[in-house]
Length: 470
Image (cartoon, rainbow, N blue to C red; front, side, top):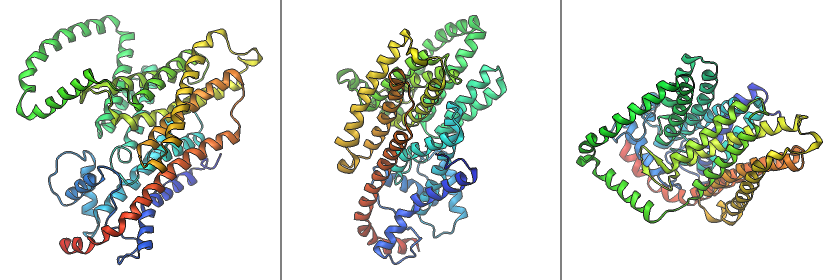
C-alpha cells in the first residue's frame, strides 16, 4: 500500500501512465492496421462517445482561428496557443490527446491533495483514493473531451479551496478566505455545473460566518435584499422576453411543464439524496469523535447544496433529471468515502467504544446506514452485473457503478463498526480496489474495441483530408 509514498515515484509514474492511456490505444491501432503514416502520429481518433465529434470540430476551429462561439471557455486560448507553438502539421486529434494527457495528470495530482485536505489521510492513502477515482470516472471517458476529462481538475481544485476556506474562516483569517474563495470560483467557472455547486457552497460558508458575528446586520440585509429583489424581477421582465431569449424561455417552459406533469426520480438524483441523508446522520453522530469533525458539517453542506442544485439552479431552472452534475457527484462521493474511512479508522483505534458496544443514541445512524447500504448494494448489482458496461455498452453505467459502490462501501464501514468493531482486512481492501480498477479498464477496453471496429472506415478519408490541408 506504500507504493505511492515516494514523491519521485508519484510525480513520474502518474504522467507516464496517463500518457500511455491517452496515446497508447491509438498507437496500437496504427500498428494493428499498418497505417501508411508514422506509427506515433495520430491524424484522427474514431468517434465512439456522444458529442465527441462536436468537440473535435470546436478544437479544429480554434486551431484555425475561426469563430465558433464560447463553447470551449478557458480552453480556447490554450488550444490556440498550442496551435501557434506546435508545427502546422499537427492534427486536431493530437492536440486533443495532448490536452487530455495534461488535464488527467493534473486531476490525479490535485484530487489527491483535495482528498488529503478533507480527510486528513496520509499522502499514500490519499493518492490511492485519487487513483481509484480516476479509474472509475475518467478512464471510461478518455475518448471524450469535456466534463469527465477537461473540467475535472478544476472541480477538484475547487473542493481543495472549499476546505481551505473553512479553515481560514474558522481562524478568522479573512484575506486567505477571500483569496481561496475567488480562486475556487474562478477555477470552477470553466464549466457552469461545477461553479454552481462550488459558488453556492462557498456562499453558504461565508453566510454562516457573517451570521455568527453580525447576526442583526445580516437579518436586516436579508429583509432589505428581499424588498429590493422582488420589484426588480418585474422590472427585468421586459428585458428577459427579448427575441434572443425566446428559445431559452420556451425550453424552460417545456421543462417546467414536464416537471409538473411527469415527475421523474432519476438514478443520479436518488444517489445524491441517499448520500445526503447518510452524510448528515454520519456528521451528527461522529461530529465530536474525530480529529476532522470540523469537516463533517462542511461536507454535509456540500451534499445538501448539490441535491438542491440538481433540482433547480440559476442556469436551467427546475429540472428533475439534471445529470450534468454527475461528475461533481462522483468526485464528492470518493472524497466523502475517504472522510468516512478516516473517521472510522480513528473510531476503531479509540477506546471509547471498547467492548461495551455502541451507545443507545446510535440507532439513527445505524438505520440510515442500513437503508443506504441496501439501496446501494442493489444498485451496484444492477449496474455492475445486470446492466454491465461490457454487455450493454452504456458508458454511463460505469459512472453509476462508481457512485453506488462508494456509498455501499461508506455505509458498510459504519455498519461494520457498530456490529463487528473490527477494521476491514487487507484482503477486503485490495478486493475493493481491484474491482474498481477492473471496471474502469473493462470500460476502456470496450471503447477500444469499438474504436478498432470503426478505424479502418476512417482511413479511407485520410488522403482526402491530407490533400485539403495541403
